[in-house]
Image (cartoon, rainbow, N blue to C red; front, top):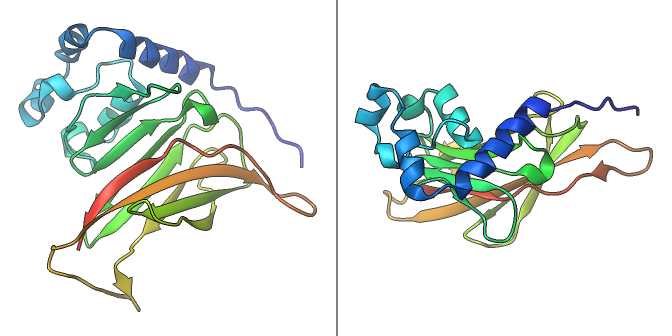
Length: 208
């Protein structure tokens, strides 16, 4: 199969800006973040809102900011000490910039009503035939699932871990579990699949 390279120069430029933002002192970031709309500032702690130029902040704003499925941020955007990339946790989930899959790659997960996790990814640096998703509960053994693509660069996987035979099970909210997710793109081969690297993990806590 012949693949057409999909340039992400614009996203790469945004990614470089985001990386630069992470190097700016916290006080300077807070000053830049103060430019967010007043409605967002009232709804969320303005000190935690990622500044303009951040890929994570851009996705959050594009999805409705405080009114998005992620809700308000509960941490600042942080870089990783051992690799390029960044993450930010929100009331309902977590967004991660994972440039090892492409300069504009964002993986994220959020909790949906009824103990469901929605894992999404986009902006991969090239097109793929399908995706592999691995998820784990509380650091346990990972389960791998093959997922069809939404576009050549994006996809979505929904997990309802507490459902049984189509019915939800519950412990009255007394148990909280952390579910982690990673994704990789794959191409169909004649005898086997050719897959790329795994993303940086993202995670969400679900109660039941």
